[in-house]
Amino acid sequence: MEMKTVLITGASNGIGYHTALQLAVKHGCRIIALARSRENLEQLKTEISKQHAGAEVLSLCFDLSSGNFNLVTDFLRINKIAVLDGLINNAGLLINKPFEELTEGDWLAIYKVNIIGVASLIKVCIPFLAKSTHAQIVNISSNGGVQGTQKFSGLSAYSSSKGALSILTECLAEELKSKNISVNCLALGAVNTEMLQQAFPNYTAEMQPSEMAEYISWFSLYGHRFFNGKILPVTTSQV
Image 1 (cartoon, rainbow, N blue to C red):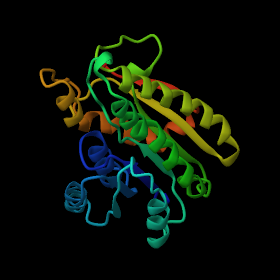
Image 2 (image 1 turned 180 degrees about the vertical axis):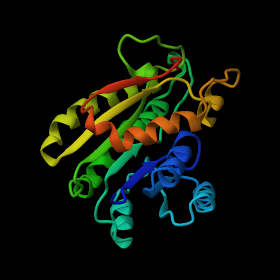
Image 3 (image 1 turned 135 degrees about the vertical axis):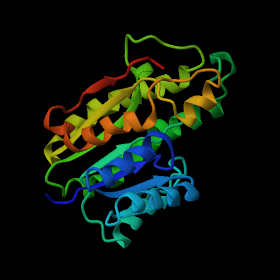
């Protein structure tokens, strides 16, 4: 089977780290890992090399809120990556703060990462994804961003941004159909990540990042066979 190339954001810790690890080690994918922490990206590369000596991992220290997405296309071209088979938009920003205390800066920061950054990255990756036999974009959302689910105080900015990501998924699935690119959204419940621990210090989720990564890594390679334009809850709880 031809090696798949998958780009994943937020790959320096938590779900993104373990998803990149499993895609490389268990599924033999070439990984393009994006994250803000250069140190953690190097740790990821080292860990993958330990578990799979022949794995191909390229890393780029990049902030989705920077706006300079030409860095991504330049990086892919410099490294002679002509085709992307998958894009996992995993990076996100969560601020837990009562609605009345949220500042304009808080709203802009969350939407810049969770929506504008995701949309901008998808846009520059489309020419690479379109060259795949069948590429898939997987947007990582939250169950709190799905209509009709239980909502939690302090997450109005975060959850609404994830709701926007769900609708963006449905729109892009239709627009990119002609390019043979599927777009799906996984609405995750609570996972015991650093981001969750920082936002909710007194709460510990039962689901571990490595467990959730097992499903995401599989879905990023095979989900397009069953779904397109779907928002799929993947949860045992609803944060």
